[in-house]
Structure formats: C-alpha cells, structure tokens
Image (cartoon, rainbow, N blue to C red; front, side):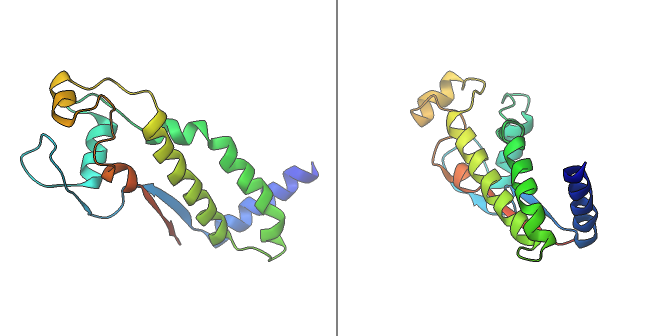
Length: 150
C-alpha cells in the first residue's frame, strides 16, 4: 500500500500543479507538396484527413495505436518520476517534456512501421511508393508536442 499511497499523493500534487502534454500536428504549418488536393492544406488538416478518413481516403490513424502500444512506457515514466517530483529534484513540466518527446517519436515510428489501409493504385503511381503516410516526410516530421500549463 505504500506505493499506492505515494502514487495517490503524486496524482493529487500533479492535479494541483496541473499541466499536460499535447502531441500531434500543432499549429498551422502548411503542407507543401504534390498531393492530390487542389489547394494548400495545413499539416494538421492533412493529419486529420488520414486519422479520420474521408469518403475517398480510408482511415489511417498513426496516433491512437502508437499511444496505446506505448502507454505502459509512459506510465513507467510517471512512476519513476514520483519520488524526484515529491523530493523537489524534478518538476512536473520536465515529466511532461519527457513524455512528449517519447510520444512524438512513437508516433513518427508508427508512421513508418505501422499497418495501414493500402493506397489507391493511382496514388501509388503518382508518388512512386505504396507506403501510406510517407511521401515527402513532411507529415512525419511535422509531429510535435507542447507542454500546456493549466
């Protein structure tokens, strides 16, 4: 019960301190490229198209599976940070930074190695590859994170 009490104390203190990390395509950075669209689009818009799918584009979500597959790693990071945060040797913002960096890398890795719906043959011909989500690497490189202080 000692570990549970410590974790409960950590959670109460974390809630008081607040903050969280957001990971994904943040901001309004334009995606530059020769995709099939007729207008410029932000990386966040393009990511949303892939995450949720459209009438003509199947869902190819790299975020949810990447985060779910690595949730134990994030929980372990929190557990290892409890004592240093309680002792004042680490602040919770640093924990959010570490988790953000890891989640960013996990999503980027999943974009390369994840299993996704195959591309349409016209798309494969246009881009010269059958690899979903990887064309110019802009979308992959656009994954980022921010620490938000509540």
